[in-house]
Image (cartoon, rainbow, N blue to C red; front, top):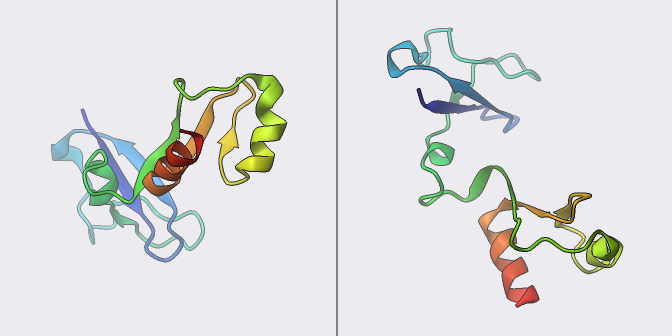
Amino acid sequence: MPFYDFQCQEHKTTKEIFCTMSKLPMEGSGDCPKCPECHKEMTRDYVSERGGIGAKKYSKPFLSDAMAISPDQILEHNRLFPDVKVYPDGRPSFDNYRQHDEYLKKTG
């Protein structure tokens, strides 16, 4: 069974559901997930479902094992790259393609 993404157009909150295509809620039916902020029906987010092909952002933060740093370097990293979150184990987290690409260019 695949995952399907829904997004509130007003608040940009997202929800991922796991179901068969035959059980997939149809927009306008009242069965789609509701936004927790405004309680309006969310619409299907086809961009994030494409697995990155043409998408502008990652559907979930991307954690990089290959670019992990020593936990001792996290404070210095946060000073140099304040927009890139680093987890306590040293793995940087990226929210979108541009942030990931810019980080790669700056760090070599």
